[in-house]
Image 1 (cartoon, rainbow, N blue to C red):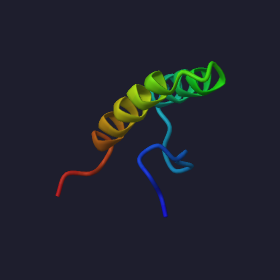
Image 2 (image 1 turned 90 degrees about the vertical axis):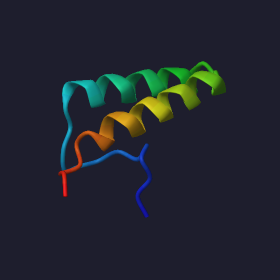
Image 3 (image 1 turned 45 degrees about the vertical axis):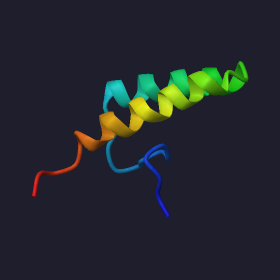
Length: 53
């Protein structure tokens, strides 16, 4: 099962990479509020990658 915050192997853009990097730094700093913020930003950003139906 894939979640909006899981790493996608099919497509990576520079902004995706920056968001993932920021999320990993927040995890390392144990800043759970910031991790949540990045999860939301990642989900919103990746929704723009979805093809329009």
